[in-house]
Length: 201
Image 1: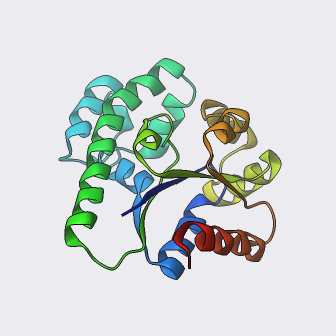
Image 2: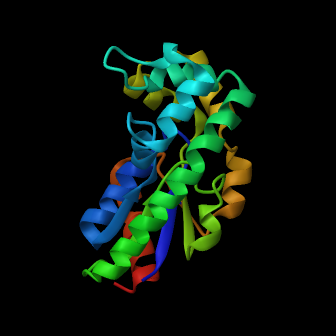
Image 3: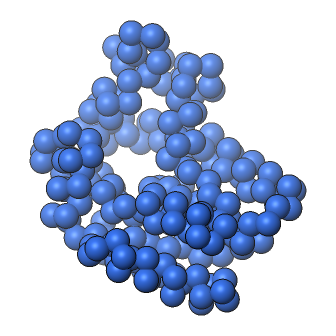
């Protein structure tokens, strides 16, 4: 079974596109960002290491890690972001590999495996997949989407985007590019074209 990664910076709408492939073309979708949220939950291996390195001030009232507080720390300090990634990335990769193996062993009627994640290049996941699809949206549109979605200031959004891989570098890894700047119907037309080429639908 073929394995594809779909990636893009914050606010590009990659998860909406991944959902479309999941529903329309029976892709087995692995949500890497969701796995990233799971690995830092209480009881998971990363939890204690994160508390040890970042302190208990990042915890909410029920003892879970508050991702907004943690995010505000790491996105304003490159060293702390690298430290967090060194804790979480190996666990995320391991869980993704487990999901791939589970899908293949179940041998269900999926057309392909689709890994949906923001850091597929940084974690080297792209090296072990068949294709990498990269979603593009111009910067200002991403800022407006993130303002609406996450209720962050322009400064906070730009801080986060600056810590992510630039479009100039990102596109060099792309086997296919999906432009999600227009109406979603225009994006769907591109997705259907890719499905025909890649899956021979």
